[in-house]
Amino acid sequence: MLYLIDLESVESRYTKQWKTHLPTLLTNSGLEVTVIEGPTDIPDATTPGAFLNFGGTNIYKSAQLEQIAKLFCEGKIKNGDYFLYTDAWNPTVIQLKYMAELLGIQLRIGGMWHAGSYDPQDFLGRLIGDSPWVRNAEMSMYECYDDNFFATDFHIDLFTNTFWNDDRDIDRQRLHSIRKVGWPMEYIETDLEQYKNMAKEDIILFPHRIAPEKQPEVFDYIAEQMPEYQFIKCQELNLTKSDSSPDK
Image (tube, rainbow, N blue to C red; front, side, top):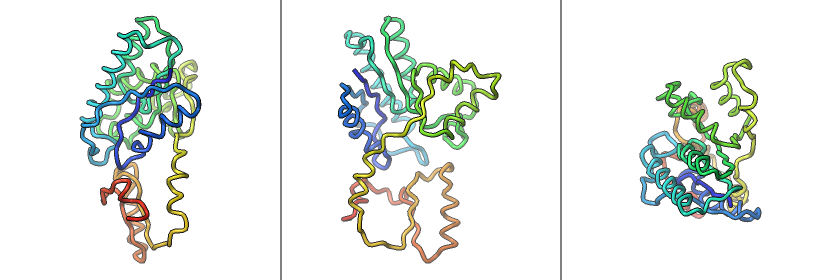
């Protein structure tokens, strides 16, 4: 059994697509999938400039933990089961590891890393930085995972160079769990098909969050240099997925 510990769906983010796309993708590959999700009545807005709502995400993750604990209590978790966290920065993985090891159940656990305190442009990096509690928490989560998934070499280097300053600090055994993989975005090709052959307009979009790591000031500078184009920051429009379809 593969247990998918999902990331709450945010209308303006790709997690909206992941909510349905990931279970379908995994099931179509021949896996038996159980999705562990949180409640739908948490705040759906993100904290300004952030990926998630800082309070809401903890409501969501706490509900996921309760479900995981009940599965253990009911004897449904078995040797060989796999838990895939679509956001590795999820403290419930520590409690999952706690239950599995004390009960003697042999699991594998994978986590997809997006960001953390080790990224100076992330909220954790900017507001908390190298505080011991967050760095030790991230390393504890990292050690819980049998597979630590990263999308790029840049991200791997950002992580490893933060936690291990040079080769003398690195126990090579601690790096064996790092996996460089592509993120599951196969749905994009299908979603873009609806825009094929549309008439072009002189519009340049900023499709990112308005956050320091996305460098919106560069977009503003280019807009000043090219006044003949219309420059639009998508997040400022607060559109839903359907609002942005070609027929709108």
